Image (cartoon, rainbow, N blue to C red; front, side, top):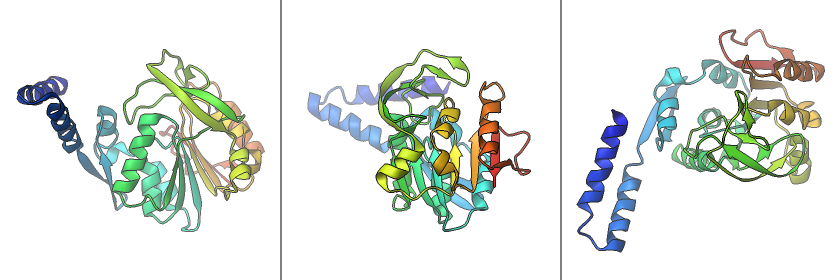
Length: 265
């Protein structure tokens, strides 16, 4: 029903502009598109986060407070103001913005083009773009130029994969792809003189294990890691072993009903 109404509204706008000169018509339709870029506010543990609702995926993820991950918000609540959070797989910036509003320094990594655009706009909309470093980078176990394969080009979409056409649900046929710089966490810190994170949120729906394998020196300085682990993912046990071998313990605060696992020192 909503798709039908949206198509009708689009047809009305296009019909109303038909009498206009060609260039004027395109300018008017572009302005209408900008004005229809709806903003939505979502409460999150006492904070108000605003988003540009530019696709059905964003509308779904920001529908209400219950659509946010309470365990992720609580994990961020427990951090100190001088901590540094790396949000790897930041998507449109929900948790990066929340952390920035809590006073944390945030580095938000998002390689998918439409998500990165939305991430930057949302950081600006919430007036915290001075506290969030947004970076269109991917991480892996090696550094180089890779292709990111997209399940959708819409902002807020997920389940993309870097370097392989396979995510947590198996092989998929990408709808689009583009090039992206991929680095190891250790190389990123060393090459750019970046202070290592004190906390890492890792949610990329595909190569979490490879990302962790590329950052032993970085992980040595980290207090906690929140990683989304799907039950069907083949790498679950390997991720657990890698983190426990690095000195982390699965937190008693990890919610048994959640897909997130929190590892702490």
